[in-house]
Image (tube, rainbow, N blue to C red):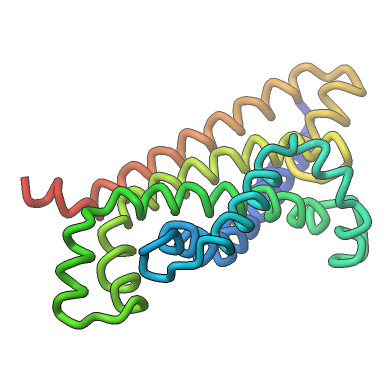
Length: 221
């Protein structure tokens, strides 16, 4: 394999990390409040608003159920409006963020709903406001589960980032398709797959380790 190809693989890896990292960050910034609201807005809950909860749930489910490759193509006009182009790493961040946001919202909702309801009632008895309960009870108690959920999100985004290469999204997927597939260079395709496996394994290991450190129950035992 030539030094030129190795250099391209290195830069494509950095592009993939940039896409996944930024999309994960933006998706978390948007999905976290959405997930908290979904978990606390049913009838009788902290921010009771059943109608808004149902509407938001439908929107989230509709976005999640859309196949990613179709989503990428469907929002090309919106992607061009946001970043001025529909190809390259900047363009890929838009559909990656849109795909990550509802996924993050749902897994954060699930993590928060696993928190012992007795802790909420105790905080209420001490006069805590709903926002204080969210900040000081729900999020800290759900943090290990949220960490694992976000790890799963990043792993999924790595797969999506490879998929977006099919439409010129840049990164390892784009390199594997343009050189490994279209130019019949199986060695390049093999290296791309191996790099993706290493990235997924690294993200998963780091996320698992961080979740164990944040788990208060593990510390108490």
